[in-house]
Amino acid sequence: MERIERMYIDGQWVLSRAGETRNVINPADGSVIATVAEGTAEDVQLAVAAAKRAFYEDGWMVAPPVERARLMFALADALEQQTDEFAKLETLNNGKALREAQFDVSDAVACFRYYAGLATKPHGQTYDVADPMQTLVVREPIGVCGQIIPWNYPLLMAAWKLGPALAAGNTVIFKSSELTPLTAIKLFQLIEGVGYPKGVVNLVLGAGNTVGQEIAENYDIDKVAFTGGTNTGRSIMKAATGNIKNISLELGGKSPNIIFADADLEAAVDWTLFAIFINQGEVCSAGSRLLLEESIHDQFLERLVERTKKIKIGPGLEEGVEMGPLISETHMNRVLEYIELGKREGAKLLCGGHRILEGNLEKGYFVEPTIFANTSPDMRIVQEEIFGPVLVVQKFKDEKEAIALANNTIYGLAAGVFTQDGAKGLRVIKKLRAGITWINAYNPTYNEAPWGGYKQSGIGRELGTFGFEEYTEVKQININLEPGPISWFENR
Ligand code: NDP
Image (cartoon, rainbow, N blue to C red):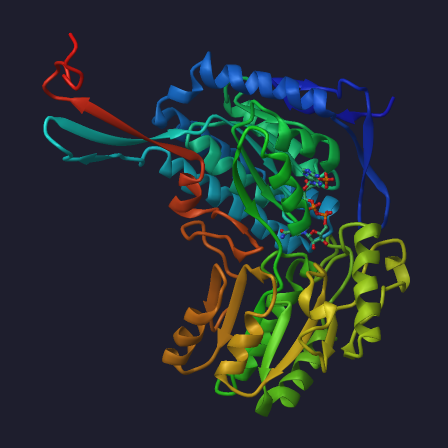
């Protein structure tokens, strides 16, 4: 009988109540690598009941911060000890190059350690209000949190979500993407192993429109945190209105990477490759629009195209591979449709533009790194998130035009500026409507600093103390230091 990977609900490894299963695919060759339980709304409801009980009755809401810290440090240690196993599994399921998966695991370990440390740091405030009252302000966990993550960074996004939620004392219903559940299942084995009390952390597997929808709607879930596409974020917002859930959304982007003529151009070419082609371009913050100052436009693109053509593409587990396959056949077709659209819209294809069908790659979902120039701001390939290895180039005359072009999308997640003029770099960044920005760099991310977007790129921030606070409520406590009647009404 085939082995079915299970969900983790109320401290038990369980099959779906409906008895359904789903095959998980290796995007490098289309083969089935696992069969997992496919949950439904009913499984979410069971997990919610367990999480509610763990929070209120079993006392997780008042568990000592030092205990929450101890468990999370232990989880980080356990994960670190299995770095290689997790990295290989992530590459097998997601497709990304193994060296990227290795970074993801160590980033996830660091994220858990950061939040384990933060668990013991919250402190309140006191206010000297009108005598004889004294006001205290304290932070408390929100309660039962639903968390929905995408397929592009399955393990790292789990750390970004679980780290702050559990450190702050919440209980969790966690859903990974149906396409990439394998490292989450393995992580929950560690969660069980280090001794999190039952019901505190629950893993429900299944599709977005069933399990995800129920998480967004369920009346007993107090907060929903989501990372994924903007349209899905919109539908989660609507579904969450029933009980006025606290929401945080980390959504899409079409982020500008602006290169001024006075930049170190060789370094800027190098960072540009990293900005758009890391993780096959399946990155929310990807620098997917390259804005080039007119005078360096042609020379910069010549060098960029030359280096792009040399990127080594193949199955992520193969030695030396720098870029793997896209996540699924459906997503690959979506990216290829955008490439065809770019041609129809009249953009000039400088390199790439096709699925790779050579050698052992024909069964996988490999797409060439692709660059379009001669674009205009109203083209759909310039405005819409493609979420693949597709870069669109825009030309600008001066600082003012660069800023106007950069801000001209519905998104506001990230932005980069390359210049050797320090004042200009900061001046431009201050005018960009984006939540995550870099000067003379693109994409490095730090657990200490807030991550999230302006405009339709989301609501709220992850990481850092900001990310922790997103999982807390603020309570004011007013104490009468001279207890006695207020005597507002005279009619005793
Ligand atoms: P989605 O945003 O739809 O998927 C992200 C997560 O949301 C998955 O766990 C998914 O579940 C879940 N989900 C889907 N529908 C619902 C729903 N109605 N209610 C609750 N949860 C739901 O991404 P897609 O895979 O469909 O990709 C579409 C586009 O979204 C991409 O091409 C890209 O542009 C963008 N995207 C952006 C990401 C980012 O980090 N900014 C990440 C992923 C995608 P499941 O997969 O199990 O069905």
